[in-house]
Amino acid sequence: AKPKGTLPKGFEDAPKIDAPQNDTSDGKSKQDKLSEYEDDYLKRLEQQKIDDAKAAAEAATAEAAAKVSANKKGGALPKGFEAKATPEPAKKSKGTLPKGF
Image (tube, rainbow, N blue to C red; front, top):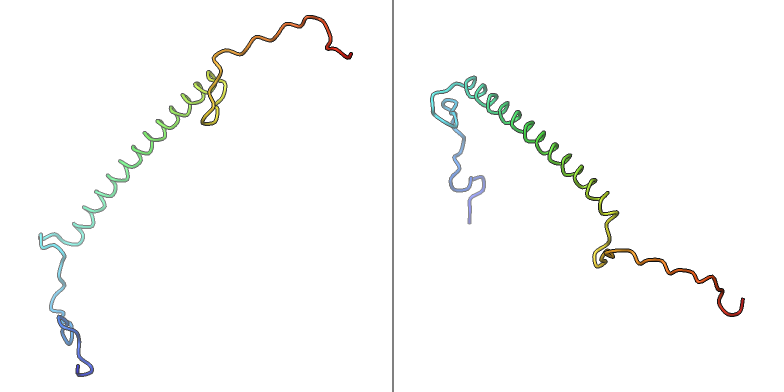
């Protein structure tokens, strides 16, 4: 049904290249766009360094707080276990042996 050697709809036989087309027609040269992009990139990089430093400081603070609270607690128990409020006092020995000794 279709003759061989034809392109789908929307395609031309040969692409026509008249002049280089810029994505945006704001009158800026490639050099201007490049320097703008570079400035933007450097700003983002600097901001990322700041954010990373803040995150590291927060993590260190949280870790230090966790160590302090772990020292106070005496250890963490698995889920479902509850820590005893006070350890039971040891039973006093009466000084007698069980029967059979």
